[in-house]
Length: 472
Image 1 (tube, rainbow, N blue to C red):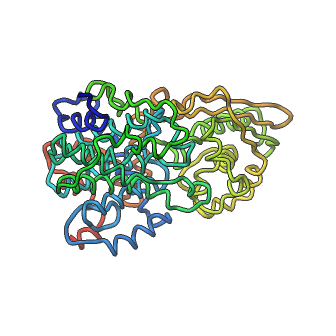
Image 2: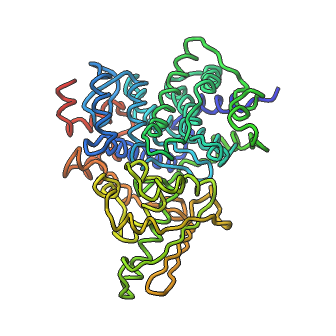
């Protein structure tokens, strides 16, 4: 009898361990874990809207024991801590992302694994192996449908995330293949998450990573208690892919959902995001800063720019350019993070894009807004999206034309961030939290012994937060 995709994934998840995963994959997983911790702490900053909301949540959710809510000085039940940390990981759009699958595993898998690992006394080595499992499952499920979810307005974090988190949870807690398969079936009931927030500037989208982590943990708990799920959750007529993608499901590649599991590893190809905005904009930021430098060498002031054209692929183009009126003059930081007009103008005029670019004060920069209002966006018919998020940028200034084609978004395998880049990103993200000790904190986390419990690994963060010491 042929195994379903869910059963194949469950067999892989139940059997994977540190001994079956190559050392280089496990090293990469640790880097993604530490990066994800950093972006969650950044999202918890009191300077950010997400951080102020998180502080209120932490007061209501805190408990005397449980799992760490990063940057909040409190603990909560594992599933709530996972929701909290996953939402913070997506709050500033700096969580990692795999290219052609469109999966964003770091904001879902890492919060789920750390919360469960801390609560159940698992080791750092076990958490790393389970993280690999979750990444591989999310990525392969993304291969089945590629960009079709985005075309329909869904978000893969909350759609694919529960399945990856449930597989990771089952691996971490030692569940058998049958229990994990049931958990995957239950996840089909939890799969949800729409993209409308990216068009309106509202912040509910940041919940998607956390929801995936939360739902995956709940599904694993329910399966362990005896609730069963459909083994045909993926292929069935009323299964996950058909219900969410009809009528544009087309030739879904179910074979890619399990191809090479345990042999071919995609986690190391997952991109670290250098900029706190939608990944579709990253190559445009690089292109714009390159053109700005060229203008300066030619003695041309960036303020003399008269026209800008950005070309990128659909469905990403619509995501970052519509509705045009609000994208040209974003009213909220979250809206700005999904605006090709605002981010490109900021890079051209200010020469960089960072956390401060999306502060309320920066959103009122008249020079940036004036240029943003003159930027046009159009389809790039030669783009290889979603394999990459390339940029084609043309700038008119001083009667001349300046053009850049950036074929690979920064962080992709072809334009990978170095270890030093990831370390510097962690320092920027956690400076508010650990001050001058941010880089030393990164080094400690990267060197932490695998045999030590996750609770001690996360305990490394606690001395930087006196509030947690008082609460513990």
